[in-house]
Length: 453
Image 1 (cartoon, rainbow, N blue to C red):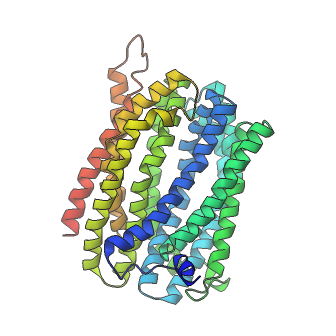
Image 2 (image 1 turned 120 degrees about the vertical axis):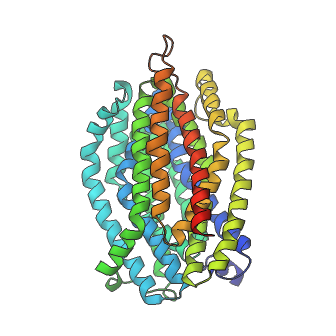
Image 3 (image 1 turned 135 degrees about the vertical axis):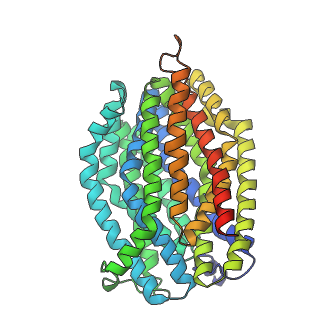
């Protein structure tokens, strides 16, 4: 029983072998990230199998808009994670408590803003993206339900981020697994049982995320030995609010840059027709799982670096960085091989259309090697954020995404126009992504080496 309790306790990453602490922390979070990805994947599988390829395209077309309107929250979550890990490493109960309280209050504000702006902006943005008439109604329905219930999504992410900042990635995993199983069950019940279509998967996701956020809140309220969790600590004091936003907004802007690029590229993707849109959805779902180790090790390195810099252990940060990058690259390489060997089976989960499976696998082969490059980028960027440097990753994202990816995508599409492809080759969007990932890894490594010798 004592050993079990230790698994769910906050983990101090300032002691022990760096690689071991990173792996111990990352593995539960990796499983959790995979489970998080299952939310979207379950939606896509259920609508693809029970409703059709156009419904699958509709769900996928909604995500660039979701990402664009959720960037306000990304800044709050990232800033909170950095501050929690640093104050926990420094053993500063007062500042840790106030940081968690302020994060909860700002999340409430962000939820209200998105619940108002999201539904109003949905239709105009879908029309701006040239969303085909055959799927625009489904897209709008999905997005409005998600935005109305966005508080559950926000609070799960902020509270699970606090738990991870405290070194407890296992509790967040357990709560996420529970809500993921619930989401899959509700997806099938609402869509196959009640014929609710795209609206059914949106409602299932909102309900499941709300439950996971409640479970995280209950866990935090029981950690009174680590910090104070009460209304007094939730007062939005300027000092903590400003610091949180100062640390987090560069990451929020980074996500905004990615989202704007996704919106721009989605407009190009929509011009290729429903088949390519559905293909893009399938590839991005598989991509989500392939990218999970990279994002996981990036988050783990943020917590690791934050706790150790809070304790004044810079040499330990450097040692952990080397270990973390090696592990991330090795895991990503293994996943790339798996995708190349078994990718076709993964694609066929989403659709029974052979042509769509073939097209999706073709696009996946273009992206495959880029995951190894992203392992380097995410790990090093995670360390920089943990050290309080959120600006450098933002500028690198700006360069690789806006300056590089979008122009390359449209440039390739323009120069490959033909009678068979009047708007250009659909490979253009995937080639541009590979170019951006590779270049991003190179300049991230260069900046990191120069700044943190």
